[in-house]
Image (cartoon, rainbow, N blue to C red; front, side, top):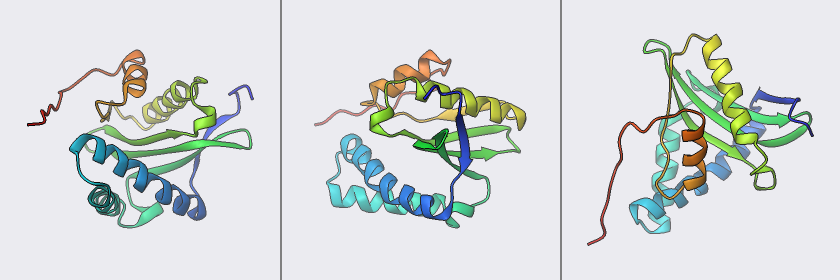
Length: 156
């Protein structure tokens, strides 16, 4: 696989169901790590937040859900929200399957996404990264994202 075949393809409904099944526990894990909630509570919060963001599922207006493919091979998923009025986009999720991580796919997907956003005349691309996710943070900083603020917490 040479990445020349890498593309963002709109998720099909079956893929979306699979995406939801995976993103909810994955996001809950991040919540549990960062907000120090127990797993059940974090799962419930994750489910509520994602349902709230995607009330019409795969067809929620202004939310773009992509299945990432290298040729015929599925390598991950991407979820972007676009606010055309403000000319900005927000990255909710980029997920590269474990066996394809560390091969430059994250960078390549972000570059493809930026190109797609520019074609839509979007001028600002934002994202949130959890503090413990050092790999993602390094990637985003390397491709030109700047920190807009830092949330902090101390266990007492």
